[in-house]
Length: 343
Image (cartoon, rainbow, N blue to C red; front, side, top):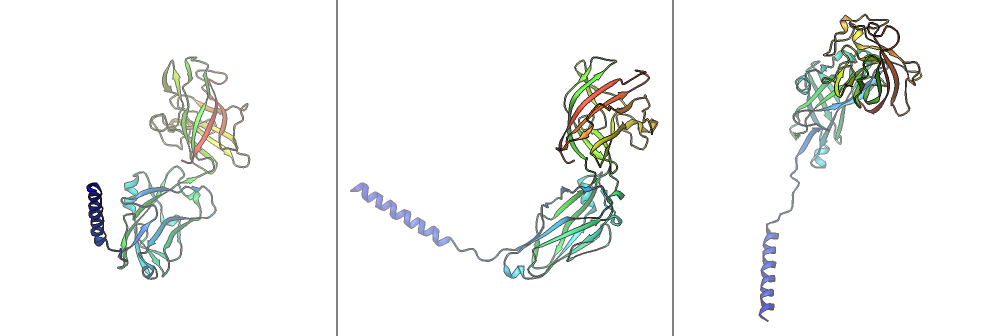
């Protein structure tokens, strides 16, 4: 009986305590705020990649998606005006190597969106009653006017909104724009390698290549694993990693057949910039594209030498250096470049 009495007392206390808690809980009223944000944005700006095709035909795409998160139906049904800065400082902060996209290379599109002040000016985005999404779009009439070896940037930061709204923390974004042909991307190179002069030179292992657009049908082959990323080939010299100085690839494709039409030595092409691997300015240029030490890149006609249906590239090629091997190739490469994804 004493135990039962104790339990009854405990239950009574628990009920009383719970009742006290319930008395302090009040229903949530409609006290939310309306926020305006950039979809996928942050503060400071985050970077979103937006590659475009390296073609002369017009391309239109969204560069900034602006959202109005209305607190209630009344707020949704009010017009809201948003000011967005063409944020050149955010572009520089995101990557000092970005080029600001020149205003003469694109036109602004999208309803309810206007701009004043040119590069570094301001966009005005107007949400009509009932609107909660507005897109800033641009049209690039001719992507081949862009420098395909460089990346461009456009920055967007919300700087002002109507009095009935607040600026979200998700207020800023930088859009990276690069003109890319069909073969531009990241690949994993694997295969075999032989140097007829030095048998100790053998295949080291898989390496990451980036194919970088320099024309509608041509790419630089950058070895991302070599000295921070330069054209070149890493091999093993009796167990130690090394590479050929002044030797790397530029590759040409046939867009009609997806076959490799030609290759040449990057360091024999004076139109290309110098790297830690050598100076192309000392090269001969067309047609042989020999580097200053006489090295040339030649496609082996016995290879498949084509892009596969899964975007892998199968290629055989030679390093020719007449000062070392007067007749025939010095080195033989038989490779598959497995496509990993966009650059």
